[in-house]
Length: 272
Image 1 (cartoon, rainbow, N blue to C red):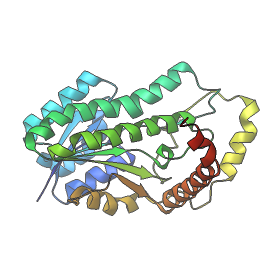
Image 2 (cartoon, rainbow, N blue to C red; image 1 turned 45 degrees about the horizontal axis):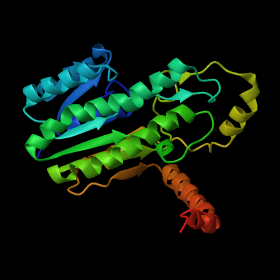
Image 3 (cartoon, rainbow, N blue to C red; image 1 turned 180 degrees about the vertical axis):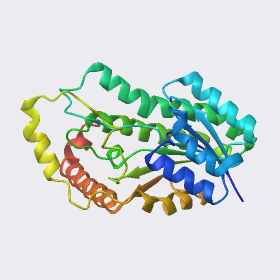
């Protein structure tokens, strides 16, 4: 049975790949982008099965209006994929106030506004699935991507609470956590701080530590995302890519070891 799926950031990268895969199999898609012309190819190819809407996810009222238009046009919204976002590269000290606030506005608040907008529709339907695009950097952090990681850590906390709040309404929440893929995420769609040469060594060391096969093939995620959408009991979290699994497993083993080594201090802090 076909579904109606609202996806943000559908003009490139994962958003475009997933939108086209859904359209190819017969789903109805509401595809949003800041530049509406970027969706012309999909509209020309898939006609009535796609509704293209101009949307900057930072605009809360615009997000609510887009969700209303989608509901009026297709009659329902079964799935929301909050995909819109970008990477901010730079050391913490280098980051300006505007750069930090802009990163959170898009990656966190934009996702929050769309989630809020779609929830009344899904509650009324008695079913729905909200899929949040996080990152492996929503579970671990690395140098040079601290603000991006902070925005995705925020997405993780928000979405875990949301999942518990809306489960009783028949609404599922899933968090997708990719590692690196061959999208434009680190290219022209990324933002960069003004470099402070004192951090050149940190940046070079970070770059040198990235394995040559770290970036997966973006098209390889399609089957996983379709399976997630079709699942009757979807997971709260879904890692994508072998390095996502490896990095998170190693990180949490290290955290457990550290917590265990400080267990006596932790328990004594209870005070009684």
